[in-house]
Image (cartoon, rainbow, N blue to C red; front, side, top):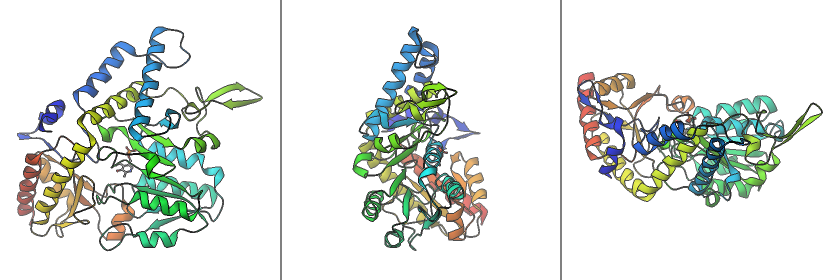
Amino acid sequence: MTDERAQFPLLSSSVGKAPLVYLDNAATTQKPLCVLEALERYYRRVNANIHRGAHYLSRLATEQHEAARQTVAEFLHAASPREILFTSGTTAGINLVAQVLTSSFKPGDEILTTTDAHHSNIVPWQMLCERTGAVLRPIPLTPELRLDTAAYEQMLNPRTRLVAIPCVSNALGAAHPVQQMTAAAKRNRRDTLVLLDGAQSTAHQAVDVQALGCDFYVFSGHKIYAPTGTGALWGREELLEQLPPWQGGGEMIAEVSFAGTTYNKLPFKYEAGTPNIGGNIVLAEALRYVQRVGLERIAAREQALTRRLYDGLAALDGVQILGAREGRGALVSIVVPGVHHYDLGTLLDHMGIAVRTGHHCCQPLMASLGITGTTRYSLALYNNEDDVERALSATRRALDMLR
Ligand code: PLP
């Protein structure tokens, strides 16, 4: 897959004199030529507002936009494109779900999320609890930093209305057993809803929302080689049919009068206003790119590199890795007692290595571990052995300087 690097122009840039090694892919990925070109092509040749346009460009943009929805549906193995709602990303998808569930919740209902959840999978539920009197409970971690599935099964009870789980933790890298956890939620109560946060998994492993058995699945386009401001929420059709719309405006209506308004059919009921037309079309281009490279190939390659990264970091003096070697996504997070993560990240940057430092939007996790942050190395399909070796030797040098 070394040939794929040539598809990503930014990867051949330098930071000062040091060639760039980009290992901040969990935050956002670089974009391949086909994506860059598709975005330009859209604005050069297609750009028009979609739906109800009498003219050629509007028809063309509408066709491409709805074909993009079909591509997302196929990528996620959704039953129908009516189940695909375009969003600006994972955060927007979770907030949409939290908003439309408001009238379904009552005081005392319980929502479970995970201790290692991203803030975007915590705060919207806290806000839902504030609106409804529901209660948010965190699923604890084991000492090995896996989700404590035994504790989770004990927490499930007749008041559990929603379980929201990241497929892969963005701070720890742990891949969670989401299929089993979804099944357990459904055994508890058939109508316990399950939302899976695919922000850190969609670019790294194949997803089949029907096989997962969940009710909602969210992901961000920019973490899968598409532009920022793109993403999708998948929801089971019968649920989306029953739930109320969220934002009001153009497109989401069937008929508007001052006497009252009726709503559009799926998926448009949830897409008020002009969507990110070009972005959504290009999201489909990015998904096709990933399919061409092949998710199985990507996963095999990234897993091998992740293990090398893990072993190399584990061999460095004083480095503590968060979580076990196996059962992880394409990232490794470290803590070095006596060394501030920000200082390490800054020195690595001077050597051309882009990593992310800090709490990774997981402050409750950091508090539970008694740390303020970590240094996170995260991979994408274009990373290679050389990137990993350069990151390891730079980390060794940086730590020598800092101690
Ligand atoms: N969930 C997880 C697990 C993430 O890693 C992230 C971003 O890093 C998000 C949610 C939020 O994604 P976005 O900022 O693209 O909405």
